[in-house]
Image 1: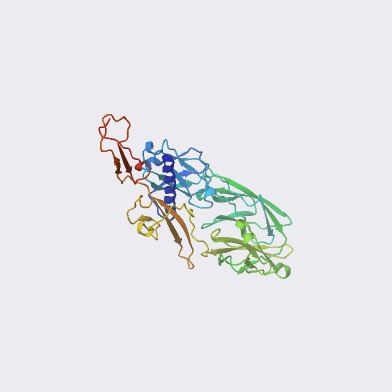
Image 2: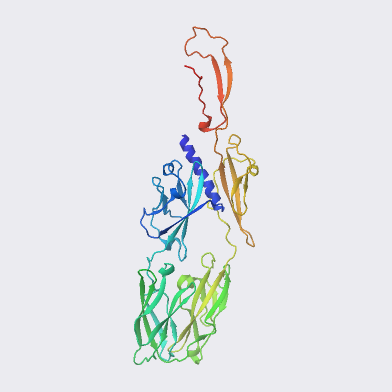
Length: 465
């Protein structure tokens, strides 16, 4: 029964320390690295050694690992003190698109209670090949297109990061086109077809090519898409945008249907060959669910709710195509930056704990308003108060501040600091020599204010038989 109570107190105390860690109070930190997709049972690090703990103490001190992740990937082997992998780790699920992936853990030991912050860096491996949006792309190019004209291609996507993501593009050998590859900061490489030889629809109406995307892994992985070039009859002027790149900033609270930008293109042709239709060329990343473009005016409007916490920026590829019998198209980029609004209150992982009573809390505890570290102010007395309930509030510094709170239970552990109190209630003044064995001759009352085993009293007569 006493063991059960001790474990219960340890669990509550553990929750208390974890709650404090979420309030930004951290202990010493240990960092390990492990590659994704390793087999369960893989050794991560000697946690017992790094915590200066004896392996023989681990079970008695109830060393345990607490993870903030919904999936628990690690645990400690109490027989060896090693931190090991217990579940498959997919870096792309844990940290999609992030260059650095860290899973934060807390190592908690009892007797005395201590908490250590442990970080495990998940290293990327080249386990994904580049993938194009479709198996084929069709590009319409007028036979009157000038040499050197460029035609953007849909990019391949690779969820791996660093050198394991898309590194280069290759084009199958042909007489008409070569490939221009550009690399933009934080966007990765993009490819364009460059016309090298004049097209003649009457000689060849269609050209079939293979575009290959290669990542930088070792060994590298690749993906392909088929390019079909439809050669169109002469409509010899292509639309030209007033800008090659448009930029706009939009608040995440912008209502659906709000115009945010107008793109403008000009076509020197007359009649239907100079009338333009604006469309989005690319629909990755939920673009078609968030924005709409008026096909005649080029006005771009919001279509759905924007959320900075979900996506902080969008890249739109807008195509302007004329209405000619053999239409010609051109493209521009629109970069939409989503501005954050203070619409999220701070959140605790623990909303409330069990209540056990409180008294003179402000005389006993204080909290650092910057770090969240809670400290004692006065002496604690188990016999006076066995538990305190603290209400901790966290508030951000937004223009319109938002706040949240949690309750933290501090349970005081008893120390054997009270001696037994002996009282003699009654005593026989004399005892006959023929008094029978087992006859009561005195009533002694003993009390100890300590709790649990510290309050259990054993009475004996020194030297007695």
